[in-house]
Amino acid sequence: MSDQESEKKRLTRRAVVVTAALGASAATLPQAQAAVGHGKSGGSSFDAIIVGAGFAGLTAARELKQYGYRVLVLEARDRIGGRTYTGEVAGKPHDLGGTWVHWCQPHVWAEKTRYGVDLEVSPGGDANDVVYLDLQGARHQAKISEMGESAYGPVIAMLADAREIFPRPAEPFVDTRWIAEDRLSVADKIASTTQTPESRILAETSCTALGGCAPANMAWIDVVRLFSLSDYDFRLLTDVASRFKIKGGMRELYSALAADCGATIQLNCPVASIETGSQGVRVTTVNGKTYTARAAISTLPLNTLNDVKFSPPLPKEKARASAERHAGRANKIHILLEGERPIFTAWAPGSGPSPLNQLLWEGAENGFTHLIAFGTADHPLKIDDKAAVQAAIRQFLPDAIVADITAHDWNADPYSKGTWCISRPGQISHALQVLQAPHGRIFFASGDWASGWRSCIDGAIEQGIVNSRALHRLIALKV
Image (cartoon, rainbow, N blue to C red):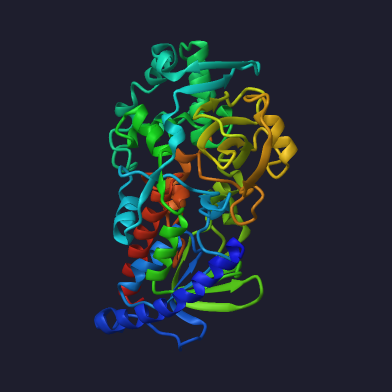
């Protein structure tokens, strides 16, 4: 059975749970029910419509259930999860999209606790042997434990003023000193500081992996933000980015959230237009179906926001940010190599000649080694071409034979047009408040403009909570 068929069967089984949950909420929240309008069962009128069934949309639906609202979730894909997607690699579940979580991310950790899912460790984070390429593509081998200050010292020194720039990194509008600092790219910052050859490779590798984009395209302020959210600790940041993941894949968490959200979820329903008026909203799908509600929440990613027609049109600043797009263009490829290799990691600078900039060892068994490779579409690679991927891997491992590859091309996906949101220099300081603002009775919830862990699953959950509360307040006014 394919992943998509399994996902559809899970959603069918959830329908019974969703119906029961909706009935229970209606019985226990009579005051909230009385404050809203209702459509007929199975009809086209709802209290709220949510566009998108990723973490932001499913969280918003779950929160709105607490008020007894009838909620419709319209999802363009044939599955839930958005930019998280658990597939199969060598017969085991692995994430092709968003993966790693951490207890210093408050929203995702609360959901992990709520639904009782377990963590497992990505072992590659503990590798001591490293194979790295220099800026000319020459191959080197080293022990991380022996690299010491020559590699890590200058990188950490670049972040020395992070606490002053971002004293409250999860509340960007409480202390706005960071806005004045949003002018440099990662490449600018590295070039303006003293670096050893090893530290430059480490800095470019780390930042390219964090951003999924070339150093010249990534705002340095986003590195500072992520470092600050990680308690100003570089080692903790690496743990947050690539160490702990949900056992069984993110599917375990987003499926539990969907089962609990109490909403009607319709798949294969891309939205064509959203109209907002004084009394409600009208949402029309690409196939011509129309639904109405008191208010709506759009969870469209930044790069696809302009693909839906809004009436009245979106404010120019919001539309401009979508047209500009964020910089995140990561390639993530699960690779099976012939032979069982011992644990190692691999680095390559983002401005170097390799289309891959990091390899994480995920395990070796049954005659194969499982790697997760990261690169960026700023340096093109046909991620579904085994020969092309093998050529890239052989820059690090000259004798490697690629047995299989598994990947999802998020950059070509029409419902994402990119990966996680990493801003361009000067972009987010001008756009963040605009992107968070509602438009009439339409609210906008996406991890792409979260206040805290923007670019992470935690940020999507944050935005689902914030915007469901805002929608409830609007409806509760009975206007």
